[in-house]
Amino acid sequence: MADATLVRLGLIAEQRWGLVSTAQAESVGVSRKQLSRMARAGALERVAQGVYRISGAPPHVLEAVYATWLALGGAQETRSTSGVAPVVAAGSTAAVVHGIGDFSLDGLDFVVPRRKGTRLAGVRLRIRDLCPEEVLPVDGLPTLTVERTIVDLIDIGTDLSLVADALRDAVRADKLLAPDRLVRHLSTAATHRTGSAAALARDLFERAGVVPEGWAHV
Figure 1: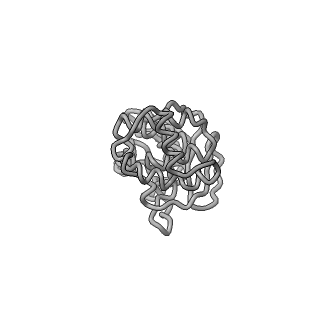
Figure 2 (figure 1 turned 90 degrees about the vertical axis):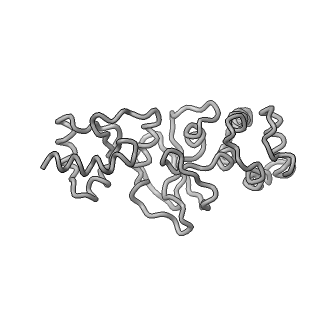
Figure 3 (figure 1 turned 120 degrees about the horizontal axis):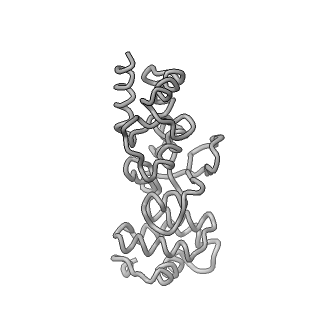
């Protein structure tokens, strides 16, 4: 029975970075008590509140992000009416996931479509209505696109020099795929500053010291 239970959990974990949440386990008939017993026996390792790693699965460098996403119900809750994932990595967390900028994972930032409470320490949830073009799966994790991440960093008050660093990394790594889309996303941010969205984008590119392909046509 224990082997069969571990197989059921393994089928879930192999799709999600070697991790399984208590909610996912319960969906296949494995109780929290069983998970605790398996953890004590060494078959599982608890990595976050309500999240376990299958023994033998290597820890991922972004495990804290993945485990938190699972703990928030990212793999269980239904998508929004527009089809967007229920929990999306945002702000500096999205930047770290994309590998741009110089940000830490001291706190984790996610966007949700509606009010959602959490007791997880260091986790910030922001309510935003996102459309599908603003979200991209990165190694299976729903994340704001690079363009939307840049704008989100501005929206939450990140120093523009840090935003420019992230933008520079994105351009040099060919991860900024749509400068015109960046300008569209900047429209709201630009209303709180002098000048247009295009002018704000130009300022960011100048600070970053890069010119992305296609920028001259925006």
